[in-house]
Length: 107
Image 1 (cartoon, rainbow, N blue to C red):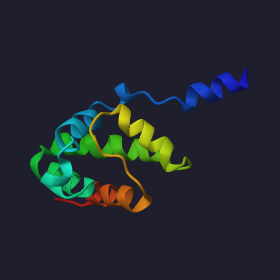
Image 2 (cartoon, one colour; image 1 turned 90 degrees about the vertical axis):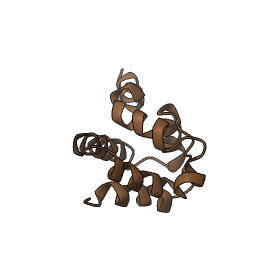
Image 3 (cartoon, rainbow, N blue to C red; image 1 turned 90 degrees about the horizontal axis):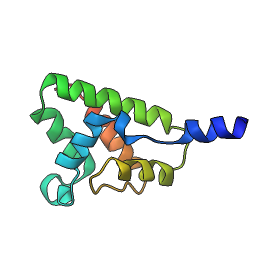
Image 4 (cartoon, rainbow, N blue to C red; image 1 turned 180 degrees about the vertical axis):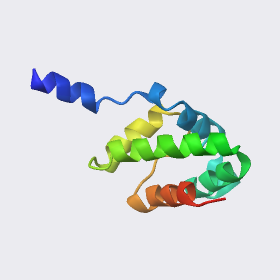
């Protein structure tokens, strides 16, 4: 019984992150590196382009996602990010921290 609860808790539901799904499809699409240079560059562009409400909601969802994956390895986070759409597949913690920093920066 405990195993079932644990496996359900570990499941990732992209539908719980609608703003991140929008961000991933609009800014982290297959050409994001050509357009923004990096995922952090895409996040910075979004924070500049988006409304205050959009940016705040996306920041909150990113923080929620990061918290839920804090103790998990990067491949597990990568699987979740793939479900959000977009083309970004982070290879290391530095890439992920870059997005953290972009969302944390005040504009």
